Length: 346
Image 1 (cartoon, rainbow, N blue to C red):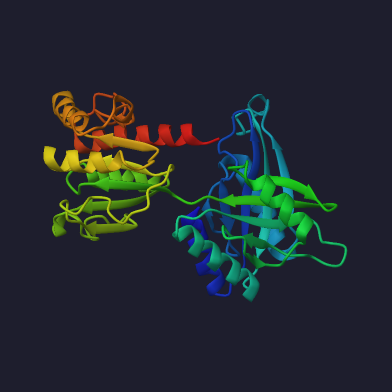
Image 2: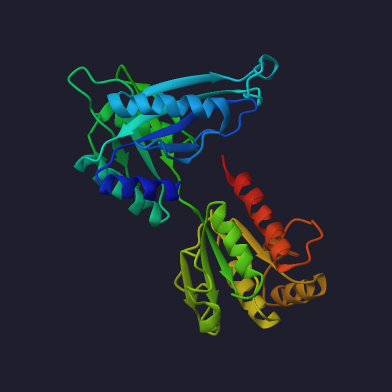
């Protein structure tokens, strides 16, 4: 999402329009799920995908028409039984795609700049786009910010209330009816925060893979050379910390945050884990053998932590895939992060 938003902002800043094609709904076996997005440019180039194959080709062709006319469009694709007819729509499901032209006008630039800024702060927001013009003219696209502010055209109190109520229960785009009109609601979800305590050989591939699958990566270490931005170019933040003052001191950790502990020694593991257990983090994992883990658990129990506290910890960390190399261990860790993130979703 964030990469495509950055591409949109760059394109608009260059004075070029672009069509955004977004999967609104998907049923059955489809190549991509709701929320997947593709950008279509005037030179027929694309960024992102809605699944490839014949359906994507049809979306690209329609995108050229939307680019020329400026009229938004909903497209429905039924891929059931297509394989037997010789088509390449072999997934066997159905999906609906919304296409809209993003013009390089001041209002659109302002909205997508605000969208990028909000997501950069790890805050969620909602884009509301009318599918049909209002009786007195097109109300236009608007962005609903976490603090209640609006960027763009105000669609009216009835629509705003309905959009906010619907937004509480959605993680993917939907079409909503309100005040006699239809609106495309697209939740822009912030990246899942991931704090990696330790900047060693396992943290590099772990952070890189995690960033690829939508985590906002922060790497902490007490050694400057192991918390350097050039060592972790994919990380949103790197920071040199003093373990004596705390690994997580000054950081706001919420229920959607994940903490991975891969420090270089037992003492650091114990300190980082003790702090992590004092947060509501949705995932806490610590690398190490069972013997090392048990020794740290004994220290925690002696310090007043409970068995319920310790039950929150994933250790040994990662899914059991017989991983050996740092890269394989990273795959197992990120797979577990993905599973736990999905389990937290409503």
